Image 1: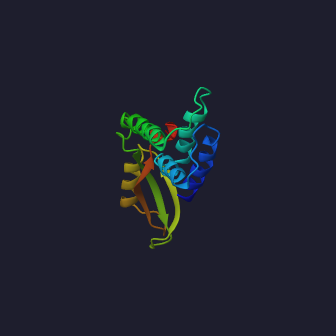
Image 2: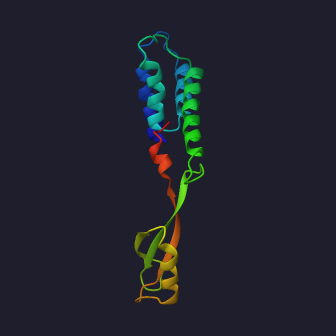
Image 3: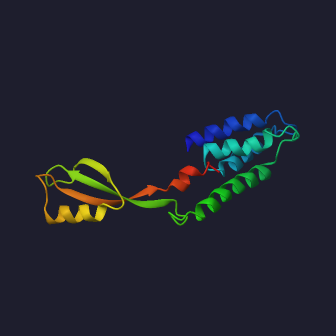
Length: 154
């Protein structure tokens, strides 16, 4: 969160050369809160780039204009994720890990990824015939879907 605030402050400085840049601290605080709507450092930079990347724009945007662009970027990311067949828009998919514990404790000795098509047979083998003194278990885990990684931080 602190990183986001710092990036918002540095990005506000990119607007300072535009005509009508605010001089009052209250207005600058409004700009900061408008940029924070973007919720990620990448999106904050993209919002400011909308206004600084166009040579024809010489007028500083209002806080409302900044907020509008930030919401539009967020919405475009959400729309792209909703269309994902793998996660159905949630942004997460199930994965499986083989967890080996020290002896009969719950202290994890190691954790290994298990292929999607192998988890059930592996879990059944472990349940039917435990191997060695260490306890093992196949666990379901939530993993970030590739759609979240593929979509640029909108």
